[in-house]
Image (cartoon, helix red, strand yellow):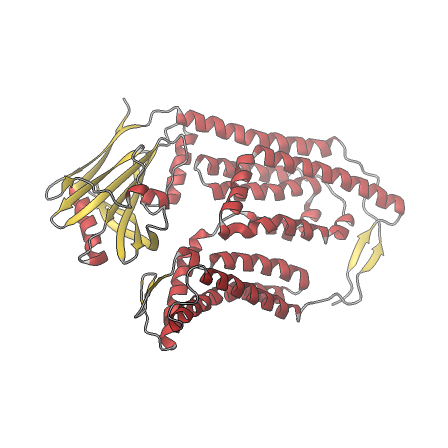
Amino acid sequence: MGAVEREFPASVGDRTRVTDRWRWAFLLTAFCVACLFVAFRDTAWDMAHTWQSSKTYSHCVLILPMFAYLVWIRREQLLLTSPRVTYWGLTLLIPLLAAWLLGYLGEAKVVQEFAMVAVVGVLVLTLVGTEVLRILAFPLSFLFFAVPAGISLVGPLQNFTAWFTVHALTFSGVPAVLENHTISLPTSIWAVAETCSGIRYLFASLVIGIFYSSIVYRSWTRRVIFVLASIILPIIANGVRAYGIVLLAYLTDYKVATGVDHIIYGGVFFITLQVILLSIGLRWREIAVGGPRLVSRGLPNPDARFSHRGVLAPAIAVILIAVAPLLAKHLWDRSAAAAGPDAISVTADQPWQRVTVASDDWDQGCNLEQGFRERYQSGPQYVDVCWTSYSGNEGAELQGAAKGYGNPEAWSLAAQGRKHATLNGRNAILEQDLLQSGTNLRVLWTVYWVGGEYTADASRVKLLQAKARLLGKSAATAVIVLGSENPVGGVEADQKALQDFLTHASFAVSPQS
Protein backbone atom coordinates (compact mmCIF):
# COMPACT_ATOMS: atom_id res chain seq x y z
CA MET A 1 0.00 0.00 0.00
CA GLY A 2 1.35 3.42 -0.94
CA ALA A 3 2.28 6.22 1.39
CA VAL A 4 -0.45 8.40 2.80
CA GLU A 5 -0.31 12.20 2.68
CA ARG A 6 -1.44 14.13 5.70
CA GLU A 7 -1.67 17.80 6.41
CA PHE A 8 -0.30 19.17 9.64
CA PRO A 9 0.52 22.61 11.03
CA ALA A 10 3.85 23.90 9.73
CA SER A 11 4.95 25.44 13.00
CA VAL A 12 4.80 24.86 16.73
CA GLY A 13 2.69 28.01 17.10
CA ASP A 14 0.19 26.73 14.56
CA ARG A 15 -0.01 23.39 16.33
CA THR A 16 -0.64 25.14 19.65
CA ARG A 17 -3.43 27.26 18.19
CA VAL A 18 -5.02 24.21 16.58
CA THR A 19 -4.79 22.36 19.89
CA ASP A 20 -6.56 25.29 21.57
CA ARG A 21 -9.29 25.18 18.96
CA TRP A 22 -9.69 21.46 19.53
CA ARG A 23 -9.85 21.96 23.28
CA TRP A 24 -12.76 24.38 22.88
CA ALA A 25 -14.44 22.18 20.30
CA PHE A 26 -14.14 19.13 22.56
CA LEU A 27 -15.51 20.97 25.60
CA LEU A 28 -18.49 22.37 23.69
CA THR A 29 -19.27 19.00 22.12
CA ALA A 30 -18.94 17.21 25.46
CA PHE A 31 -21.21 19.82 27.05
CA CYS A 32 -23.90 19.36 24.40
CA VAL A 33 -23.72 15.55 24.62
CA ALA A 34 -24.00 15.80 28.42
CA CYS A 35 -27.07 18.03 28.00
CA LEU A 36 -28.53 15.42 25.64
CA PHE A 37 -28.17 12.63 28.20
CA VAL A 38 -29.57 14.83 30.98
CA ALA A 39 -32.59 15.83 28.89
CA PHE A 40 -33.16 12.27 27.66
CA ARG A 41 -32.14 10.64 30.93
CA ASP A 42 -35.19 8.35 30.96
CA THR A 43 -34.23 6.97 27.56
CA ALA A 44 -30.59 6.57 28.60
CA TRP A 45 -31.63 4.89 31.84
CA ASP A 46 -33.90 2.44 29.98
CA MET A 47 -30.95 1.46 27.79
CA ALA A 48 -28.63 0.97 30.75
CA HIS A 49 -31.29 -0.97 32.66
CA THR A 50 -31.75 -3.35 29.72
CA TRP A 51 -27.98 -3.91 29.57
CA GLN A 52 -28.00 -4.86 33.24
CA SER A 53 -31.18 -6.94 33.33
CA SER A 54 -30.97 -8.85 30.04
CA LYS A 55 -28.16 -11.30 29.35
CA THR A 56 -28.94 -10.95 25.64
CA TYR A 57 -27.67 -7.38 25.73
CA SER A 58 -24.96 -7.65 28.37
CA HIS A 59 -22.36 -7.02 25.64
CA CYS A 60 -23.72 -3.47 25.26
CA VAL A 61 -21.81 -2.46 28.38
CA LEU A 62 -18.58 -2.74 26.35
CA ILE A 63 -19.74 -0.45 23.52
CA LEU A 64 -18.77 2.84 25.21
CA PRO A 65 -15.20 1.70 26.12
CA MET A 66 -14.81 0.33 22.59
CA PHE A 67 -16.07 3.61 21.15
CA ALA A 68 -13.59 5.58 23.26
CA TYR A 69 -10.74 3.38 22.00
CA LEU A 70 -11.81 3.79 18.37
CA VAL A 71 -11.75 7.56 18.81
CA TRP A 72 -8.40 7.46 20.62
CA ILE A 73 -6.59 5.62 17.82
CA ARG A 74 -7.80 8.34 15.44
CA ARG A 75 -6.48 11.20 17.58
CA GLU A 76 -3.59 12.04 15.23
CA GLN A 77 -5.94 12.30 12.28
CA LEU A 78 -8.23 14.55 14.28
CA LEU A 79 -5.40 16.90 15.24
CA LEU A 80 -4.56 17.30 11.56
CA THR A 81 -8.01 18.76 10.91
CA SER A 82 -9.59 22.05 11.87
CA PRO A 83 -12.93 21.83 13.73
CA ARG A 84 -15.57 24.02 12.09
CA VAL A 85 -19.17 24.78 12.98
CA THR A 86 -21.65 23.47 10.40
CA TYR A 87 -25.02 25.09 10.87
CA TRP A 88 -26.86 22.91 8.38
CA GLY A 89 -26.31 20.06 10.82
CA LEU A 90 -29.00 21.65 12.98
CA THR A 91 -31.52 20.90 10.22
CA LEU A 92 -30.82 17.20 10.80
CA LEU A 93 -31.27 17.59 14.54
CA ILE A 94 -34.91 18.62 14.22
CA PRO A 95 -36.22 15.45 12.45
CA LEU A 96 -34.24 13.24 14.83
CA LEU A 97 -35.78 14.96 17.83
CA ALA A 98 -39.18 14.59 16.15
CA ALA A 99 -38.50 10.85 15.75
CA TRP A 100 -37.62 10.63 19.44
CA LEU A 101 -40.83 12.51 20.28
CA LEU A 102 -42.95 10.08 18.25
CA GLY A 103 -41.14 7.15 19.87
CA TYR A 104 -41.90 8.61 23.29
CA LEU A 105 -45.58 9.22 22.52
CA GLY A 106 -45.90 5.76 20.96
CA GLU A 107 -44.00 4.02 23.79
CA ALA A 108 -41.49 2.69 21.25
CA LYS A 109 -38.30 2.58 23.29
CA VAL A 110 -36.12 1.33 20.45
CA VAL A 111 -37.10 4.36 18.34
CA GLN A 112 -36.21 6.71 21.17
CA GLU A 113 -32.86 5.00 21.72
CA PHE A 114 -31.84 4.95 18.06
CA ALA A 115 -32.84 8.62 17.73
CA MET A 116 -30.81 9.58 20.82
CA VAL A 117 -27.68 7.84 19.51
CA ALA A 118 -28.15 9.46 16.09
CA VAL A 119 -28.34 12.88 17.75
CA VAL A 120 -24.81 12.34 19.09
CA GLY A 121 -23.54 12.02 15.52
CA VAL A 122 -25.44 15.12 14.43
CA LEU A 123 -23.94 17.11 17.31
CA VAL A 124 -20.47 16.09 16.14
CA LEU A 125 -21.33 17.18 12.59
CA THR A 126 -22.73 20.52 13.78
CA LEU A 127 -19.98 21.46 16.22
CA VAL A 128 -16.79 20.17 14.54
CA GLY A 129 -17.72 19.80 10.87
CA THR A 130 -17.92 17.30 8.04
CA GLU A 131 -14.17 16.56 7.88
CA VAL A 132 -14.12 15.42 11.48
CA LEU A 133 -17.36 13.48 10.96
CA ARG A 134 -15.74 11.51 8.15
CA ILE A 135 -12.91 10.48 10.49
CA LEU A 136 -15.32 9.53 13.28
CA ALA A 137 -17.97 7.97 11.03
CA PHE A 138 -17.14 4.40 12.05
CA PRO A 139 -16.88 4.99 15.83
CA LEU A 140 -20.14 6.95 15.80
CA SER A 141 -21.85 4.21 13.77
CA PHE A 142 -20.49 1.64 16.21
CA LEU A 143 -22.45 3.38 18.99
CA PHE A 144 -25.70 2.06 17.53
CA PHE A 145 -24.77 -1.37 18.86
CA ALA A 146 -25.47 0.06 22.31
CA VAL A 147 -29.18 0.06 21.43
CA PRO A 148 -30.81 -3.20 22.67
CA ALA A 149 -32.59 -4.26 19.48
CA GLY A 150 -32.96 -7.32 17.28
CA ILE A 151 -35.00 -9.53 19.59
CA SER A 152 -37.14 -10.53 16.59
CA LEU A 153 -34.26 -12.80 15.51
CA VAL A 154 -34.96 -15.18 18.41
CA GLY A 155 -37.69 -17.07 16.55
CA PRO A 156 -35.69 -17.80 13.37
CA LEU A 157 -32.64 -18.76 15.43
CA GLN A 158 -34.76 -21.14 17.53
CA ASN A 159 -36.10 -22.73 14.37
CA PHE A 160 -32.61 -23.25 12.93
CA THR A 161 -31.23 -24.67 16.19
CA ALA A 162 -34.08 -27.14 16.54
CA TRP A 163 -33.83 -28.16 12.85
CA PHE A 164 -30.05 -28.57 13.02
CA THR A 165 -30.19 -30.58 16.26
CA VAL A 166 -32.78 -33.06 15.01
CA HIS A 167 -31.02 -33.66 11.70
CA ALA A 168 -27.64 -34.05 13.41
CA LEU A 169 -29.11 -36.55 15.91
CA THR A 170 -30.75 -38.51 13.12
CA PHE A 171 -27.49 -38.57 11.17
CA SER A 172 -25.77 -39.90 14.33
CA GLY A 173 -28.24 -42.77 14.59
CA VAL A 174 -30.30 -41.29 17.45
CA PRO A 175 -34.05 -41.37 16.62
CA ALA A 176 -35.46 -37.87 17.09
CA VAL A 177 -38.72 -36.18 16.12
CA LEU A 178 -39.22 -32.40 15.93
CA GLU A 179 -42.56 -30.78 16.68
CA ASN A 180 -42.48 -27.00 16.87
CA HIS A 181 -39.47 -26.45 19.17
CA THR A 182 -39.80 -29.77 20.99
CA ILE A 183 -37.36 -32.61 20.25
CA SER A 184 -38.63 -36.04 21.25
CA LEU A 185 -36.17 -38.88 21.85
CA PRO A 186 -37.07 -42.44 22.89
CA THR A 187 -36.13 -41.71 26.50
CA SER A 188 -36.59 -37.96 26.90
CA ILE A 189 -38.10 -34.74 25.58
CA TRP A 190 -36.04 -31.59 24.96
CA ALA A 191 -37.39 -28.09 24.38
CA VAL A 192 -35.42 -25.50 22.40
CA ALA A 193 -36.35 -22.44 24.47
CA GLU A 194 -35.71 -18.80 23.62
CA THR A 195 -32.57 -18.89 25.75
CA CYS A 196 -31.28 -21.70 23.53
CA SER A 197 -31.58 -19.62 20.34
CA GLY A 198 -27.97 -18.44 20.64
CA ILE A 199 -28.90 -14.80 20.04
CA ARG A 200 -26.78 -13.71 23.00
CA TYR A 201 -23.65 -15.22 21.49
CA LEU A 202 -24.53 -13.99 17.99
CA PHE A 203 -24.76 -10.37 19.15
CA ALA A 204 -21.52 -10.60 21.14
CA SER A 205 -19.69 -12.26 18.24
CA LEU A 206 -20.94 -9.65 15.76
CA VAL A 207 -19.82 -6.72 17.92
CA ILE A 208 -16.39 -8.26 18.56
CA GLY A 209 -16.04 -9.15 14.87
CA ILE A 210 -16.78 -5.62 13.65
CA PHE A 211 -14.55 -4.03 16.28
CA TYR A 212 -11.69 -6.46 15.68
CA SER A 213 -11.82 -6.26 11.88
CA SER A 214 -11.72 -2.46 11.96
CA ILE A 215 -8.46 -2.58 13.93
CA VAL A 216 -6.49 -5.36 12.24
CA TYR A 217 -7.63 -4.91 8.60
CA ARG A 218 -7.57 -2.03 6.14
CA SER A 219 -9.07 -3.94 3.23
CA TRP A 220 -12.88 -3.85 3.10
CA THR A 221 -12.84 -7.33 1.58
CA ARG A 222 -11.10 -8.82 4.60
CA ARG A 223 -13.31 -6.87 6.97
CA VAL A 224 -16.51 -8.11 5.33
CA ILE A 225 -15.26 -11.72 5.26
CA PHE A 226 -14.34 -11.63 8.95
CA VAL A 227 -17.67 -10.04 9.95
CA LEU A 228 -19.58 -12.67 7.94
CA ALA A 229 -17.57 -15.37 9.71
CA SER A 230 -18.49 -13.73 13.03
CA ILE A 231 -22.17 -14.05 12.09
CA ILE A 232 -22.20 -17.51 10.55
CA LEU A 233 -19.95 -19.22 13.11
CA PRO A 234 -22.08 -18.60 16.25
CA ILE A 235 -25.28 -19.62 14.43
CA ILE A 236 -23.83 -22.95 13.31
CA ALA A 237 -21.95 -23.37 16.59
CA ASN A 238 -25.16 -22.98 18.57
CA GLY A 239 -26.69 -25.84 16.59
CA VAL A 240 -23.59 -27.94 17.25
CA ARG A 241 -23.75 -27.01 20.93
CA ALA A 242 -27.41 -28.06 21.25
CA TYR A 243 -26.75 -31.27 19.33
CA GLY A 244 -23.70 -32.07 21.48
CA ILE A 245 -25.58 -31.51 24.73
CA VAL A 246 -28.52 -33.71 23.76
CA LEU A 247 -26.23 -36.41 22.37
CA LEU A 248 -23.95 -36.38 25.41
CA ALA A 249 -26.92 -36.63 27.78
CA TYR A 250 -28.39 -39.47 25.71
CA LEU A 251 -25.14 -41.47 25.63
CA THR A 252 -24.46 -41.03 29.37
CA ASP A 253 -28.00 -41.93 30.42
CA TYR A 254 -28.60 -38.25 31.34
CA LYS A 255 -25.84 -38.12 33.93
CA VAL A 256 -23.91 -35.44 32.03
CA ALA A 257 -24.93 -32.21 30.24
CA THR A 258 -28.23 -31.76 32.05
CA GLY A 259 -29.38 -28.94 34.29
CA VAL A 260 -26.80 -26.21 34.82
CA ASP A 261 -24.13 -28.30 33.06
CA HIS A 262 -25.42 -27.52 29.59
CA ILE A 263 -25.20 -23.77 30.28
CA ILE A 264 -21.60 -24.06 31.49
CA TYR A 265 -20.59 -26.30 28.62
CA GLY A 266 -22.25 -23.93 26.15
CA GLY A 267 -20.43 -20.88 27.53
CA VAL A 268 -17.03 -22.56 27.47
CA PHE A 269 -17.71 -23.85 23.95
CA PHE A 270 -18.50 -20.38 22.57
CA ILE A 271 -15.57 -18.69 24.28
CA THR A 272 -13.23 -21.30 22.84
CA LEU A 273 -14.63 -20.82 19.34
CA GLN A 274 -14.34 -17.03 19.61
CA VAL A 275 -10.69 -17.27 20.62
CA ILE A 276 -10.01 -19.61 17.69
CA LEU A 277 -11.76 -17.22 15.27
CA LEU A 278 -9.74 -14.22 16.49
CA SER A 279 -6.52 -16.21 16.30
CA ILE A 280 -7.20 -17.28 12.73
CA GLY A 281 -8.15 -13.73 11.76
CA LEU A 282 -4.88 -12.44 13.17
CA ARG A 283 -2.92 -14.48 10.63
CA TRP A 284 -4.18 -12.20 7.84
CA ARG A 285 -3.77 -8.91 9.67
CA GLU A 286 -2.64 -5.92 7.61
CA ILE A 287 0.25 -3.83 8.94
CA ALA A 288 1.14 -0.49 7.42
CA VAL A 289 4.26 -0.58 5.23
CA GLY A 290 6.68 2.33 5.35
CA GLY A 291 4.49 4.61 7.45
CA PRO A 292 2.69 7.80 6.38
CA ARG A 293 4.39 10.62 4.52
CA LEU A 294 3.76 13.92 6.29
CA VAL A 295 3.47 17.04 4.16
CA SER A 296 3.95 20.49 5.68
CA ARG A 297 1.13 22.58 4.25
CA GLY A 298 -0.29 24.16 7.36
CA LEU A 299 -3.92 24.29 8.39
CA PRO A 300 -6.25 26.88 6.89
CA ASN A 301 -6.68 29.92 9.10
CA PRO A 302 -4.58 28.69 12.00
CA ASP A 303 -5.27 31.96 13.86
CA ALA A 304 -9.03 31.49 13.74
CA ARG A 305 -10.85 31.50 17.07
CA PHE A 306 -14.30 30.37 18.08
CA SER A 307 -16.46 33.44 17.48
CA HIS A 308 -20.08 34.06 18.38
CA ARG A 309 -21.00 31.61 15.59
CA GLY A 310 -19.10 28.88 17.41
CA VAL A 311 -21.09 29.54 20.58
CA LEU A 312 -24.43 30.07 18.86
CA ALA A 313 -24.55 26.58 17.32
CA PRO A 314 -24.26 24.66 20.63
CA ALA A 315 -26.72 27.10 22.22
CA ILE A 316 -29.33 26.37 19.55
CA ALA A 317 -28.66 22.63 19.81
CA VAL A 318 -29.07 22.65 23.61
CA ILE A 319 -32.32 24.62 23.36
CA LEU A 320 -33.77 22.21 20.82
CA ILE A 321 -32.68 19.22 22.91
CA ALA A 322 -34.22 20.72 26.06
CA VAL A 323 -37.53 21.53 24.35
CA ALA A 324 -38.14 17.99 23.04
CA PRO A 325 -38.78 16.23 26.39
CA LEU A 326 -40.77 19.21 27.70
CA LEU A 327 -43.03 19.07 24.64
CA ALA A 328 -43.31 15.30 24.97
CA LYS A 329 -44.46 15.55 28.59
CA HIS A 330 -46.98 18.26 27.71
CA LEU A 331 -48.52 16.17 24.93
CA TRP A 332 -48.57 13.05 27.11
CA ASP A 333 -50.30 14.85 30.01
CA ARG A 334 -52.83 16.43 27.65
CA SER A 335 -53.71 13.01 26.24
CA ALA A 336 -53.91 11.49 29.73
CA ALA A 337 -56.53 14.09 30.68
CA ALA A 338 -58.72 13.17 27.70
CA ALA A 339 -61.75 10.95 28.26
CA GLY A 340 -61.12 7.26 27.62
CA PRO A 341 -63.34 4.17 27.38
CA ASP A 342 -65.73 3.56 30.23
CA ALA A 343 -66.68 -0.07 29.83
CA ILE A 344 -65.72 -3.08 27.76
CA SER A 345 -67.84 -6.13 27.08
CA VAL A 346 -67.93 -9.43 25.23
CA THR A 347 -71.13 -11.17 24.21
CA ALA A 348 -71.50 -14.56 22.54
CA ASP A 349 -74.47 -16.23 20.87
CA GLN A 350 -75.47 -19.87 21.08
CA PRO A 351 -74.02 -22.48 21.17
CA TRP A 352 -71.35 -20.65 23.16
CA GLN A 353 -72.13 -20.11 26.82
CA ARG A 354 -70.23 -18.38 29.56
CA VAL A 355 -69.00 -20.78 32.25
CA THR A 356 -67.06 -20.52 35.50
CA VAL A 357 -63.32 -20.12 35.06
CA ALA A 358 -61.23 -22.68 36.89
CA SER A 359 -57.98 -21.31 38.28
CA ASP A 360 -54.96 -22.34 36.23
CA ASP A 361 -51.51 -21.09 35.42
CA TRP A 362 -52.79 -18.90 32.59
CA ASP A 363 -54.44 -16.58 35.14
CA GLN A 364 -51.14 -14.82 35.74
CA GLY A 365 -51.22 -13.22 32.29
CA CYS A 366 -54.53 -11.42 32.90
CA ASN A 367 -54.37 -8.33 35.07
CA LEU A 368 -57.90 -8.49 36.44
CA GLU A 369 -57.54 -5.08 38.07
CA GLN A 370 -57.36 -3.57 34.58
CA GLY A 371 -59.63 -5.97 32.71
CA PHE A 372 -61.38 -9.29 32.98
CA ARG A 373 -61.15 -12.94 32.11
CA GLU A 374 -64.07 -15.05 30.96
CA ARG A 375 -64.49 -18.60 29.67
CA TYR A 376 -66.97 -19.69 27.03
CA GLN A 377 -67.83 -23.28 26.19
CA SER A 378 -69.51 -25.03 23.28
CA GLY A 379 -69.75 -28.77 23.80
CA PRO A 380 -66.27 -30.13 24.62
CA GLN A 381 -64.57 -26.99 23.30
CA TYR A 382 -63.83 -23.91 25.34
CA VAL A 383 -62.24 -20.52 24.76
CA ASP A 384 -60.73 -18.21 27.37
CA VAL A 385 -61.05 -14.46 26.78
CA CYS A 386 -58.60 -12.18 28.53
CA TRP A 387 -59.09 -8.45 28.02
CA THR A 388 -56.52 -6.18 29.65
CA SER A 389 -57.07 -2.43 29.48
CA TYR A 390 -54.55 0.38 29.75
CA SER A 391 -55.68 3.94 30.32
CA GLY A 392 -52.93 5.44 28.20
CA ASN A 393 -51.42 7.15 31.24
CA GLU A 394 -48.88 4.35 31.63
CA GLY A 395 -47.04 2.02 29.32
CA ALA A 396 -48.99 -0.84 27.78
CA GLU A 397 -47.61 -4.39 27.92
CA LEU A 398 -48.13 -5.90 24.48
CA GLN A 399 -45.97 -9.02 24.71
CA GLY A 400 -45.55 -12.14 26.85
CA ALA A 401 -46.94 -11.02 30.20
CA ALA A 402 -50.14 -9.73 28.57
CA LYS A 403 -50.66 -13.02 26.77
CA GLY A 404 -50.25 -15.35 29.71
CA TYR A 405 -46.70 -16.53 29.34
CA GLY A 406 -44.92 -13.93 31.43
CA ASN A 407 -43.66 -16.79 33.62
CA PRO A 408 -41.35 -18.93 31.45
CA GLU A 409 -41.58 -21.75 33.99
CA ALA A 410 -45.27 -22.16 33.14
CA TRP A 411 -45.45 -21.49 29.41
CA SER A 412 -42.85 -20.93 26.72
CA LEU A 413 -43.38 -19.55 23.24
CA ALA A 414 -43.12 -22.37 20.68
CA ALA A 415 -44.18 -20.58 17.48
CA GLN A 416 -45.63 -17.29 16.22
CA GLY A 417 -47.50 -16.19 13.14
CA ARG A 418 -50.58 -14.46 11.76
CA LYS A 419 -54.09 -15.87 11.29
CA HIS A 420 -57.03 -14.67 9.21
CA ALA A 421 -60.26 -14.62 11.19
CA THR A 422 -63.62 -12.86 11.50
CA LEU A 423 -63.84 -10.18 14.17
CA ASN A 424 -67.08 -8.28 14.81
CA GLY A 425 -68.34 -9.50 11.44
CA ARG A 426 -65.29 -8.27 9.52
CA ASN A 427 -62.26 -10.00 8.13
CA ALA A 428 -59.23 -9.40 10.31
CA ILE A 429 -55.66 -10.57 10.77
CA LEU A 430 -54.86 -11.71 14.29
CA GLU A 431 -51.55 -12.51 15.93
CA GLN A 432 -51.18 -16.22 16.72
CA ASP A 433 -48.93 -17.64 19.43
CA LEU A 434 -48.42 -21.31 20.16
CA LEU A 435 -47.48 -21.82 23.81
CA GLN A 436 -46.04 -24.97 25.32
CA SER A 437 -45.93 -26.28 28.86
CA GLY A 438 -44.47 -29.79 28.88
CA THR A 439 -46.62 -31.75 26.46
CA ASN A 440 -49.53 -29.28 26.70
CA LEU A 441 -50.10 -26.81 23.88
CA ARG A 442 -52.21 -23.65 23.96
CA VAL A 443 -53.18 -21.56 20.94
CA LEU A 444 -53.53 -17.82 21.53
CA TRP A 445 -55.04 -15.26 19.17
CA THR A 446 -54.30 -11.64 20.03
CA VAL A 447 -55.76 -8.40 18.77
CA TYR A 448 -55.26 -4.85 20.07
CA TRP A 449 -57.82 -2.07 20.35
CA VAL A 450 -56.70 1.56 20.14
CA GLY A 451 -58.92 4.55 19.45
CA GLY A 452 -61.75 2.48 18.03
CA GLU A 453 -59.51 0.44 15.71
CA TYR A 454 -58.69 -3.26 16.03
CA THR A 455 -55.27 -4.38 14.82
CA ALA A 456 -52.93 -7.34 15.27
CA ASP A 457 -49.83 -5.30 14.44
CA ALA A 458 -48.02 -4.15 17.60
CA SER A 459 -46.11 -1.56 15.54
CA ARG A 460 -49.37 -0.02 14.37
CA VAL A 461 -50.50 0.13 18.00
CA LYS A 462 -47.51 2.36 18.68
CA LEU A 463 -48.38 4.61 15.73
CA LEU A 464 -52.01 4.89 16.81
CA GLN A 465 -50.97 5.75 20.36
CA ALA A 466 -48.55 8.42 19.12
CA LYS A 467 -51.23 9.85 16.81
CA ALA A 468 -53.76 10.03 19.64
CA ARG A 469 -51.36 11.80 21.96
CA LEU A 470 -50.30 14.26 19.27
CA LEU A 471 -53.96 15.16 18.70
CA GLY A 472 -54.73 15.40 22.41
CA LYS A 473 -57.00 12.35 22.39
CA SER A 474 -57.04 9.38 24.74
CA ALA A 475 -54.40 6.75 23.98
CA ALA A 476 -56.27 4.08 25.93
CA THR A 477 -55.33 0.60 24.70
CA ALA A 478 -56.79 -2.84 25.19
CA VAL A 479 -55.09 -6.19 24.63
CA ILE A 480 -57.60 -8.92 23.75
CA VAL A 481 -56.26 -12.47 24.03
CA LEU A 482 -58.27 -15.54 23.09
CA GLY A 483 -56.89 -18.87 24.27
CA SER A 484 -57.85 -22.46 23.65
CA GLU A 485 -56.28 -25.61 25.05
CA ASN A 486 -58.26 -28.68 24.08
CA PRO A 487 -56.50 -31.99 24.81
CA VAL A 488 -58.36 -33.73 21.95
CA GLY A 489 -57.78 -32.62 18.39
CA GLY A 490 -54.58 -30.66 18.89
CA VAL A 491 -53.76 -27.27 17.42
CA GLU A 492 -56.20 -27.55 14.50
CA ALA A 493 -59.09 -28.17 16.89
CA ASP A 494 -58.05 -25.15 18.95
CA GLN A 495 -57.97 -22.94 15.86
CA LYS A 496 -61.42 -24.12 14.76
CA ALA A 497 -62.79 -23.44 18.25
CA LEU A 498 -61.36 -19.92 18.27
CA GLN A 499 -62.72 -19.14 14.82
CA ASP A 500 -66.15 -20.52 15.67
CA PHE A 501 -66.22 -18.45 18.86
CA LEU A 502 -65.34 -15.26 16.99
CA THR A 503 -68.11 -15.96 14.49
CA HIS A 504 -70.65 -15.94 17.34
CA ALA A 505 -69.03 -13.25 19.52
CA SER A 506 -68.96 -9.46 19.46
CA PHE A 507 -66.67 -7.03 21.26
CA ALA A 508 -67.77 -3.57 22.37
CA VAL A 509 -66.18 -0.56 24.00
CA SER A 510 -68.43 2.06 25.60
CA PRO A 511 -67.00 5.62 25.63
CA GLN A 512 -67.21 7.78 28.72
CA SER A 513 -70.21 10.08 28.80
